[in-house]
Image 1 (cartoon, helix red, strand yellow):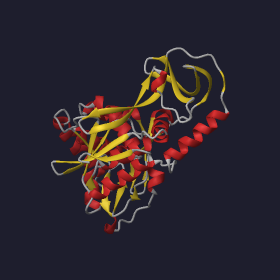
Image 2 (tube, rainbow, N blue to C red):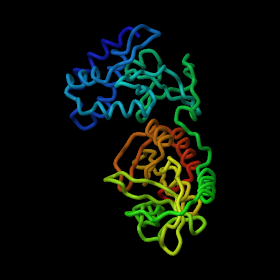
Image 3 (cartoon, rainbow, N blue to C red):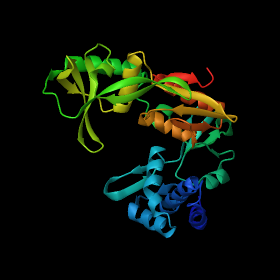
Image 4 (spheres, rainbow, N blue to C red):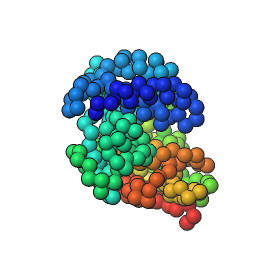
Length: 330
Protein backbone atom coordinates (compact mmCIF):
# COMPACT_ATOMS: atom_id res chain seq x y z
CA UNK A 1 0.00 0.00 0.00
CA UNK A 2 1.75 3.09 -1.25
CA UNK A 3 0.19 5.64 1.10
CA UNK A 4 1.07 4.07 4.44
CA UNK A 5 3.72 6.66 5.34
CA UNK A 6 1.40 9.57 4.46
CA UNK A 7 -1.34 8.04 6.62
CA UNK A 8 1.10 7.69 9.52
CA UNK A 9 2.20 11.34 9.37
CA UNK A 10 -1.40 12.57 9.27
CA UNK A 11 -2.30 10.49 12.29
CA UNK A 12 0.57 11.96 14.31
CA UNK A 13 -0.97 15.43 14.15
CA UNK A 14 -4.46 14.13 14.89
CA UNK A 15 -3.34 11.99 17.79
CA UNK A 16 -1.42 14.78 19.50
CA UNK A 17 -4.63 16.81 19.77
CA UNK A 18 -7.13 14.05 20.61
CA UNK A 19 -5.46 11.27 22.58
CA UNK A 20 -5.78 13.01 25.93
CA UNK A 21 -9.50 13.63 25.51
CA UNK A 22 -12.18 11.11 26.54
CA UNK A 23 -12.60 8.62 23.72
CA UNK A 24 -8.99 8.93 22.62
CA UNK A 25 -8.23 5.22 23.12
CA UNK A 26 -9.17 4.23 19.59
CA UNK A 27 -7.06 7.10 18.19
CA UNK A 28 -3.89 5.96 19.94
CA UNK A 29 -4.47 2.39 18.76
CA UNK A 30 -4.93 3.59 15.18
CA UNK A 31 -1.76 5.65 15.54
CA UNK A 32 0.13 2.52 16.59
CA UNK A 33 -1.17 0.66 13.57
CA UNK A 34 -0.08 3.55 11.38
CA UNK A 35 3.43 3.44 12.82
CA UNK A 36 3.72 -0.30 12.20
CA UNK A 37 2.45 0.15 8.63
CA UNK A 38 4.96 2.93 7.92
CA UNK A 39 8.05 1.68 9.76
CA UNK A 40 7.72 -1.95 8.64
CA UNK A 41 6.98 -1.15 4.99
CA UNK A 42 9.54 -2.42 2.46
CA UNK A 43 7.39 -3.14 -0.57
CA UNK A 44 3.82 -4.18 -1.38
CA UNK A 45 4.62 -7.78 -0.46
CA UNK A 46 7.39 -7.53 2.16
CA UNK A 47 7.95 -5.95 5.58
CA UNK A 48 10.77 -5.49 8.07
CA UNK A 49 11.04 -5.99 11.81
CA UNK A 50 10.85 -2.87 14.01
CA UNK A 51 12.83 -2.24 17.18
CA UNK A 52 10.79 -1.01 20.10
CA UNK A 53 13.01 2.08 20.45
CA UNK A 54 11.89 3.31 17.03
CA UNK A 55 8.29 2.91 18.15
CA UNK A 56 9.12 4.65 21.42
CA UNK A 57 10.57 7.62 19.56
CA UNK A 58 7.47 7.87 17.35
CA UNK A 59 5.11 7.75 20.33
CA UNK A 60 7.18 10.27 22.29
CA UNK A 61 7.12 12.70 19.36
CA UNK A 62 3.33 12.45 19.30
CA UNK A 63 3.17 13.10 23.06
CA UNK A 64 1.71 9.66 23.86
CA UNK A 65 4.76 7.72 24.95
CA UNK A 66 2.90 6.42 27.99
CA UNK A 67 0.49 4.58 25.66
CA UNK A 68 3.06 2.47 23.80
CA UNK A 69 2.86 -0.56 26.08
CA UNK A 70 -0.94 -0.52 25.94
CA UNK A 71 -0.91 -0.39 22.13
CA UNK A 72 1.64 -3.21 21.83
CA UNK A 73 -0.40 -5.35 24.24
CA UNK A 74 -3.60 -4.81 22.24
CA UNK A 75 -2.04 -5.43 18.83
CA UNK A 76 -0.34 -8.57 20.17
CA UNK A 77 -3.62 -9.74 21.69
CA UNK A 78 -5.31 -9.27 18.30
CA UNK A 79 -2.32 -11.06 16.72
CA UNK A 80 -1.69 -8.19 14.34
CA UNK A 81 1.93 -8.03 15.53
CA UNK A 82 4.35 -10.54 17.02
CA UNK A 83 6.98 -9.86 19.67
CA UNK A 84 10.43 -11.21 18.76
CA UNK A 85 13.70 -11.43 20.68
CA UNK A 86 15.94 -8.47 21.37
CA UNK A 87 13.20 -5.85 21.53
CA UNK A 88 12.01 -6.38 17.95
CA UNK A 89 8.41 -6.55 16.77
CA UNK A 90 7.09 -7.83 13.45
CA UNK A 91 3.76 -7.24 11.69
CA UNK A 92 1.82 -10.40 10.89
CA UNK A 93 0.45 -11.07 7.37
CA UNK A 94 -3.01 -9.66 6.54
CA UNK A 95 -5.64 -12.40 6.70
CA UNK A 96 -9.30 -13.15 7.36
CA UNK A 97 -10.74 -15.09 10.30
CA UNK A 98 -14.17 -16.31 9.06
CA UNK A 99 -17.02 -16.21 11.58
CA UNK A 100 -20.60 -16.76 10.37
CA UNK A 101 -21.79 -13.99 8.06
CA UNK A 102 -18.78 -11.78 8.81
CA UNK A 103 -15.02 -12.20 9.20
CA UNK A 104 -12.33 -10.55 11.31
CA UNK A 105 -9.76 -8.76 9.15
CA UNK A 106 -6.35 -9.07 10.83
CA UNK A 107 -3.77 -6.51 9.66
CA UNK A 108 -1.53 -3.96 11.46
CA UNK A 109 -2.87 -1.22 9.18
CA UNK A 110 -5.08 1.75 10.18
CA UNK A 111 -8.80 1.25 9.72
CA UNK A 112 -9.15 4.23 7.36
CA UNK A 113 -6.49 2.74 5.11
CA UNK A 114 -8.21 -0.66 5.13
CA UNK A 115 -11.45 1.03 4.06
CA UNK A 116 -9.70 2.40 0.97
CA UNK A 117 -8.96 -1.13 -0.19
CA UNK A 118 -11.83 -3.20 1.26
CA UNK A 119 -15.33 -1.78 1.14
CA UNK A 120 -17.44 -2.35 4.23
CA UNK A 121 -14.64 -2.67 6.82
CA UNK A 122 -15.80 -1.58 10.27
CA UNK A 123 -14.25 -1.48 13.73
CA UNK A 124 -15.90 -3.87 16.17
CA UNK A 125 -14.00 -4.00 19.47
CA UNK A 126 -10.24 -3.88 19.02
CA UNK A 127 -10.58 -5.84 15.77
CA UNK A 128 -12.02 -4.84 12.39
CA UNK A 129 -14.70 -6.89 10.65
CA UNK A 130 -16.08 -7.24 7.13
CA UNK A 131 -18.93 -9.23 5.59
CA UNK A 132 -17.81 -12.50 3.99
CA UNK A 133 -19.98 -11.61 1.01
CA UNK A 134 -17.43 -8.88 0.23
CA UNK A 135 -15.30 -11.71 -1.21
CA UNK A 136 -11.94 -10.33 -0.01
CA UNK A 137 -8.96 -12.08 -1.56
CA UNK A 138 -6.84 -12.70 1.55
CA UNK A 139 -5.55 -15.89 3.20
CA UNK A 140 -7.88 -17.36 5.84
CA UNK A 141 -7.10 -18.47 9.38
CA UNK A 142 -9.48 -20.65 11.40
CA UNK A 143 -11.10 -18.97 14.41
CA UNK A 144 -9.82 -21.67 16.77
CA UNK A 145 -6.24 -21.04 15.60
CA UNK A 146 -6.50 -17.24 15.83
CA UNK A 147 -8.20 -17.17 19.23
CA UNK A 148 -6.22 -20.10 20.64
CA UNK A 149 -9.20 -22.32 21.46
CA UNK A 150 -7.26 -25.49 22.30
CA UNK A 151 -9.88 -26.70 24.80
CA UNK A 152 -13.22 -27.75 23.29
CA UNK A 153 -15.07 -28.25 26.59
CA UNK A 154 -13.59 -26.64 29.72
CA UNK A 155 -15.69 -28.70 32.12
CA UNK A 156 -14.42 -31.98 30.61
CA UNK A 157 -10.85 -30.64 30.50
CA UNK A 158 -10.98 -29.65 34.19
CA UNK A 159 -12.38 -33.05 35.14
CA UNK A 160 -9.47 -34.78 33.41
CA UNK A 161 -7.00 -32.43 35.13
CA UNK A 162 -8.55 -33.20 38.52
CA UNK A 163 -8.35 -36.97 38.04
CA UNK A 164 -4.74 -36.68 36.91
CA UNK A 165 -3.92 -34.58 39.98
CA UNK A 166 -5.50 -37.10 42.36
CA UNK A 167 -3.18 -39.81 40.99
CA UNK A 168 -0.05 -37.66 41.27
CA UNK A 169 -0.44 -36.36 44.84
CA UNK A 170 2.60 -36.58 47.10
CA UNK A 171 2.88 -35.80 50.83
CA UNK A 172 3.67 -32.21 51.73
CA UNK A 173 3.97 -29.78 54.62
CA UNK A 174 1.18 -27.23 54.34
CA UNK A 175 2.62 -24.00 52.86
CA UNK A 176 2.27 -20.61 54.52
CA UNK A 177 -0.23 -17.98 53.36
CA UNK A 178 -2.42 -20.58 51.71
CA UNK A 179 -5.76 -19.77 50.05
CA UNK A 180 -8.32 -22.05 48.44
CA UNK A 181 -10.47 -21.60 45.36
CA UNK A 182 -14.16 -21.23 46.06
CA UNK A 183 -17.36 -20.14 44.35
CA UNK A 184 -19.86 -17.98 46.16
CA UNK A 185 -23.43 -16.99 45.43
CA UNK A 186 -23.68 -13.18 45.37
CA UNK A 187 -26.85 -11.12 45.29
CA UNK A 188 -26.37 -8.08 43.06
CA UNK A 189 -28.06 -5.81 40.50
CA UNK A 190 -28.67 -8.78 38.17
CA UNK A 191 -29.96 -11.23 40.75
CA UNK A 192 -28.11 -14.05 42.45
CA UNK A 193 -25.01 -15.09 40.54
CA UNK A 194 -22.01 -17.37 41.03
CA UNK A 195 -18.63 -15.66 41.30
CA UNK A 196 -15.16 -17.14 41.93
CA UNK A 197 -12.88 -16.11 44.75
CA UNK A 198 -10.04 -17.16 47.03
CA UNK A 199 -10.86 -18.05 50.64
CA UNK A 200 -9.03 -19.14 53.78
CA UNK A 201 -12.01 -20.94 55.32
CA UNK A 202 -11.87 -24.56 54.14
CA UNK A 203 -15.64 -24.83 54.54
CA UNK A 204 -16.02 -22.53 51.53
CA UNK A 205 -13.75 -24.38 49.08
CA UNK A 206 -15.01 -25.70 45.75
CA UNK A 207 -14.25 -29.41 45.58
CA UNK A 208 -15.69 -32.11 43.32
CA UNK A 209 -14.68 -35.10 45.45
CA UNK A 210 -14.66 -33.39 48.85
CA UNK A 211 -10.87 -33.52 49.25
CA UNK A 212 -9.06 -32.34 46.10
CA UNK A 213 -8.91 -28.53 45.99
CA UNK A 214 -7.16 -25.82 43.99
CA UNK A 215 -4.76 -23.84 46.19
CA UNK A 216 -2.44 -20.90 45.98
CA UNK A 217 0.36 -19.69 48.23
CA UNK A 218 1.60 -16.11 48.17
CA UNK A 219 5.30 -15.84 47.28
CA UNK A 220 5.41 -12.05 46.86
CA UNK A 221 3.01 -9.19 46.28
CA UNK A 222 0.66 -10.22 43.45
CA UNK A 223 2.71 -13.35 42.82
CA UNK A 224 1.42 -16.81 43.75
CA UNK A 225 2.27 -20.48 43.40
CA UNK A 226 -0.78 -22.51 42.30
CA UNK A 227 -1.17 -26.22 43.02
CA UNK A 228 -3.67 -28.98 43.71
CA UNK A 229 -3.99 -30.03 47.33
CA UNK A 230 -5.52 -32.92 49.26
CA UNK A 231 -7.57 -31.58 52.15
CA UNK A 232 -7.91 -33.61 55.34
CA UNK A 233 -9.40 -32.22 58.57
CA UNK A 234 -8.95 -28.68 57.34
CA UNK A 235 -5.29 -29.05 56.37
CA UNK A 236 -3.39 -29.73 53.14
CA UNK A 237 -1.53 -33.04 53.49
CA UNK A 238 -0.54 -33.70 49.86
CA UNK A 239 -0.10 -31.73 46.67
CA UNK A 240 0.53 -31.94 42.92
CA UNK A 241 1.22 -29.48 40.12
CA UNK A 242 -1.73 -27.54 38.72
CA UNK A 243 -2.19 -26.79 34.99
CA UNK A 244 -0.80 -23.46 33.79
CA UNK A 245 -4.23 -22.24 32.68
CA UNK A 246 -5.41 -21.20 36.13
CA UNK A 247 -8.10 -18.84 34.83
CA UNK A 248 -9.65 -21.62 32.73
CA UNK A 249 -9.33 -24.12 35.55
CA UNK A 250 -11.48 -21.93 37.80
CA UNK A 251 -14.33 -21.97 35.28
CA UNK A 252 -14.02 -25.73 34.95
CA UNK A 253 -14.06 -26.39 38.70
CA UNK A 254 -17.07 -24.10 39.14
CA UNK A 255 -18.97 -26.01 36.44
CA UNK A 256 -17.98 -29.39 37.93
CA UNK A 257 -19.32 -28.35 41.35
CA UNK A 258 -22.67 -27.25 39.83
CA UNK A 259 -21.94 -23.57 40.51
CA UNK A 260 -20.95 -22.33 37.04
CA UNK A 261 -19.63 -18.79 36.91
CA UNK A 262 -22.35 -16.41 35.76
CA UNK A 263 -22.28 -14.13 32.73
CA UNK A 264 -25.23 -11.89 31.91
CA UNK A 265 -26.46 -10.94 28.45
CA UNK A 266 -28.57 -7.83 28.33
CA UNK A 267 -29.88 -4.99 26.19
CA UNK A 268 -29.06 -1.52 27.49
CA UNK A 269 -30.69 1.39 25.62
CA UNK A 270 -30.99 -0.88 22.60
CA UNK A 271 -27.37 -2.02 22.77
CA UNK A 272 -26.44 -5.71 22.94
CA UNK A 273 -24.32 -6.13 26.09
CA UNK A 274 -22.51 -8.93 27.93
CA UNK A 275 -21.53 -8.51 31.57
CA UNK A 276 -18.74 -10.60 33.08
CA UNK A 277 -17.68 -10.86 36.72
CA UNK A 278 -14.41 -12.79 36.55
CA UNK A 279 -11.21 -12.78 34.47
CA UNK A 280 -11.63 -14.70 31.23
CA UNK A 281 -8.93 -17.04 29.89
CA UNK A 282 -6.81 -15.39 27.22
CA UNK A 283 -8.47 -17.03 24.14
CA UNK A 284 -11.98 -16.05 25.25
CA UNK A 285 -10.72 -12.60 26.24
CA UNK A 286 -9.13 -12.15 22.80
CA UNK A 287 -12.40 -13.12 21.09
CA UNK A 288 -14.56 -10.88 23.29
CA UNK A 289 -12.32 -7.81 23.08
CA UNK A 290 -11.96 -8.28 19.34
CA UNK A 291 -15.71 -8.12 18.74
CA UNK A 292 -17.04 -5.97 21.60
CA UNK A 293 -16.28 -2.55 23.04
CA UNK A 294 -16.06 -1.75 26.76
CA UNK A 295 -18.95 0.32 28.15
CA UNK A 296 -20.12 1.48 31.57
CA UNK A 297 -21.29 -1.20 34.00
CA UNK A 298 -23.20 -1.18 37.26
CA UNK A 299 -21.38 -4.34 38.27
CA UNK A 300 -18.58 -6.39 36.75
CA UNK A 301 -17.37 -5.46 33.27
CA UNK A 302 -19.71 -4.71 30.38
CA UNK A 303 -18.97 -4.94 26.66
CA UNK A 304 -21.33 -4.00 23.85
CA UNK A 305 -21.73 -5.58 20.43
CA UNK A 306 -22.66 -4.07 17.11
CA UNK A 307 -24.39 -7.17 15.75
CA UNK A 308 -26.50 -10.08 16.95
CA UNK A 309 -24.11 -12.44 15.18
CA UNK A 310 -21.15 -11.36 17.29
CA UNK A 311 -23.14 -11.57 20.52
CA UNK A 312 -24.27 -15.12 19.73
CA UNK A 313 -20.72 -16.20 18.85
CA UNK A 314 -19.42 -14.94 22.20
CA UNK A 315 -22.31 -16.63 24.02
CA UNK A 316 -21.33 -19.92 22.39
CA UNK A 317 -17.69 -19.52 23.42
CA UNK A 318 -18.70 -18.76 27.02
CA UNK A 319 -20.97 -21.81 27.12
CA UNK A 320 -18.01 -24.00 26.13
CA UNK A 321 -16.08 -22.29 28.91
CA UNK A 322 -18.67 -23.70 31.33
CA UNK A 323 -20.42 -20.43 32.21
CA UNK A 324 -23.99 -20.00 33.33
CA UNK A 325 -25.52 -17.85 30.56
CA UNK A 326 -28.27 -15.65 31.94
CA UNK A 327 -30.49 -12.89 30.61
CA UNK A 328 -30.70 -9.82 32.82
CA UNK A 329 -34.48 -9.93 32.54
CA UNK A 330 -34.87 -13.63 33.36
